[in-house]
Length: 232
Ligand code: AMP
Image (cartoon, rainbow, N blue to C red):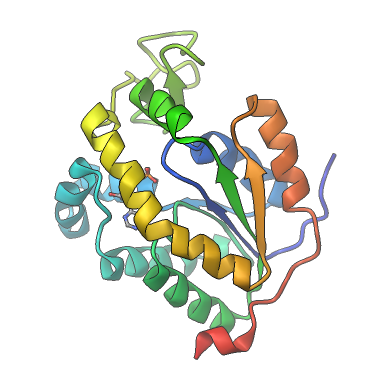
């Protein structure tokens, strides 16, 4: 089923391990907009060893959030690129209420409505299980799970042949911290978009295809404009 190509912004919210990365690529293709993942962008900066990457590394390794000013600047910079002029799928951003307010104001300025903020809901036990067995490709960012969805070419990436690695923050202590940080900082973001009337909750506990179908339905309805007062 092809969706009509509305151009606007969709937010993908969900705890680490909820499956945002797995679903986001497909969702962005369906929507015809670029996939903008704050975690992927931060890892690119870190791998390049630039100023932002160095500043972000210590927070990322602990599973803490990178300060708002750094992340907001990085995302705004990305949204200024020509391919994002008509919309984007934002994955992992906003994660704090400060980031949400900065984003809302920037989108009102650009006249881009938020079509949906989709919250991928997954139980805590599932999150821990998924994250602590996760392996990531450094080249194409594909993720696998050593029990649930192993790479057909393990220890290499089944898609591009990169050598899979376990992210520092996918180790168990960091995983627990990331989930706690998420519950503390991102729950208010979910409430915020609920109040604005753009939130859709999708059960992320099911099979990949089931979740994919539910997401497709969740982003189908007509766009909802962000009310101008949120820019104030
Ligand atoms: P992720 O790949 O989305 O799990 O992100 C990995 C790490 O990058 C997080 O644990 C944070 O340290 C950092 N990060 C990603 N997105 C954000 C964000 N929106 N705000 C602050 N830190 C972020």
